Length: 219
Image (tube, rainbow, N blue to C red; front, side, top):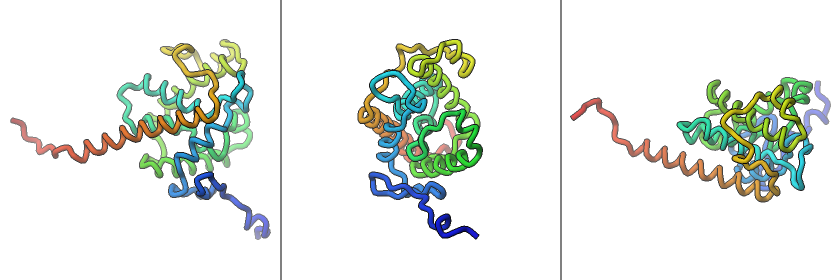
């Protein structure tokens, strides 16, 4: 039998929007993009071990991954690009745990992360999780981004980074917004990009609804 402290332990976090998000059983109704943008802009990649006056935030990383994904997948839908932008969105409440520590923690972290991902996606009318193909394409963009973050910001040599992330092709450092931004700027850019993609999604949905049904006849 669980003791009283365990039974009553708080599993929710209060957001600046006023929402209370249950980390163990997150509801899409308690997810707000303003909270996500705010949180991700204040979570540091690489445990903060990066060069520069500002931390390199998960919000800025997410913008880069979406930009790389979009260039690499020119026919990707707005839904796909929104999933790319939100690929690390659960970290607005659980933080950015570096890969070596994830391996030590094990499956519990991944379970919570997947529940949060589903709640976030459902909140914005996306599939709970990306399918295998889309997930692989987002991961490829993520890995390209990680190579440049590692070599430009985190002190890795190119040889070290190639062993961990491979050699990126088709992208150069000077084409990427890699210089760490202040939190407020990263937050605004993330929120703005989210709204741009949402506008495209709404336009695509309206076009689909307004399209005449195909009767199969041809003139």
